[in-house]
Amino acid sequence: MRLPIGNGDYVIRSYESGDVAALMKYANNEAIARQLLDHFPHPYTEEAAHEWLRAAQEQDPEVSFAIATPDELIGGIGLLLRDDVFRRTGEVGYWLGEPFWRRGIATLALQVFTRWAFRKLDFARIQAHVYEINPGSCRVLEKAGFTLEGRLRNGATKNGQLMDLYLYALLADELEGDEEWNG
Image (cartoon, rainbow, N blue to C red; front, side, top):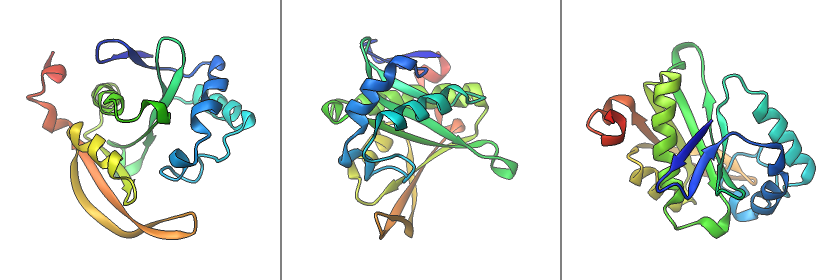
């Protein structure tokens, strides 16, 4: 899969075996790891990079992707699929290498990716959980059209500390007037 972001300077694409060095370069960052689930390792070793690439390439359907420049991976975006009564709800997660923060890349990637996911996977809802210590990600979600639905008090334990989570969501129905959605 390959989706252009914005003016084409960045893309969302399938992970490639050549992404190992860039994964280690950008993902091996405590500032990133503390904002993500515990299964995102720190330090981010070569072994962890190979393991992640193998797992992503074995997904069916493929739901984990690289955010990249034409030259290298700079981040990742993906979905957790749910089942049973939650089968039409996906949970999105994303990260960017620190040199690429505050450029609007995450917002654009999230907008493009969620539209693709709604169409490809027939979701009615895509949601995201954000730790209370990550206001930057809250802004990304809000700029991408997500609505804050609530605060989950003591909803997560990260690095041995209980913290609140914010729950954001975007509904497929909310995109009906969206130019890119209708285009």
